[in-house]
Image (cartoon, rainbow, N blue to C red; front, side, top):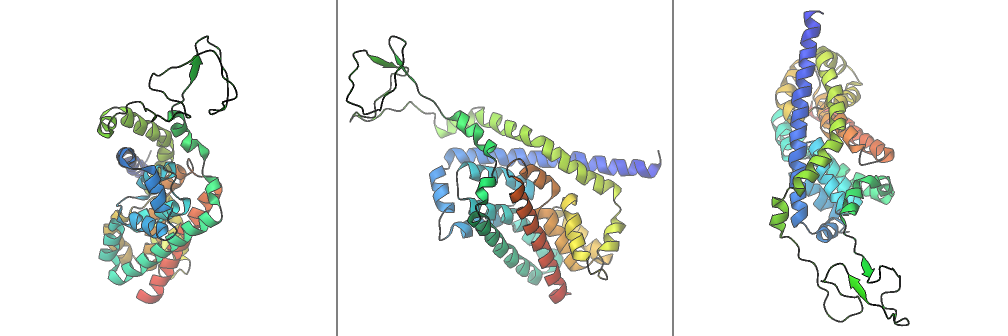
Length: 348
């Protein structure tokens, strides 16, 4: 085996190990944070705020723009919002906005491309994210959310049963007065009440919110969720590691130069499997510019890589069905191309 292949294997292996560890830590951290927030967060209030006809989309977009999450670490929070039964359109707006228009992206773009390009990009990302979320909700794409993601919540709901003292069972309307059974009903829990009594219903004592956080249930739930996503993370990072280790940088410069009219679509297309984080573009952008890659191509590469990376798409496949996946991918791809051509037309 030649030294060159060994070097490529080393680069790919290093990318996979560090990439998988980084994403795993991010996923676990964000998932645990979301579980803590769910303890304090009133699902009804979240649903009401994000379902507001006046400001739901704006709030979701603003929330996404201030959360410093990459595309993959946005998924646990999106999952939490779905489980909280928030409005589908604003959730999708948040999913688009968070990786594409967050403080890290703004800082990186400002330093790499200047304030004018950053402002134009921010406006495009903000508007397209809101439009995409609105379109998905109006077209009824909520039906393409996989029902399995709600199964854990359904299992956690408590079921109550009533036993008859002679071990038989009956069924009747809770307020039915036509039948007056002579046998006596006994409940499994002493703190019970019928729905027809005027006395207040006594609920079983609940643990305080801090006790819920202190116990191991949240960590177990977070770990279980991570294990279900781990294979998808590994597959996505594995493909990205192969591209990183075995695809030469010269290929990008050759096909994404200023002389190639298809440089921007090509850059957006290859940005998806590369999983390029916005923060990595601080050092990469100047090198690509010096190598002859156009500013629009670099922008398209960054937007596509940050907004619809292959690891993210594989992880989203566990939550959404194919129609949402296609719409999501096309939206980010279109945004990347539009921003790239616009920047090349007016700022180069």
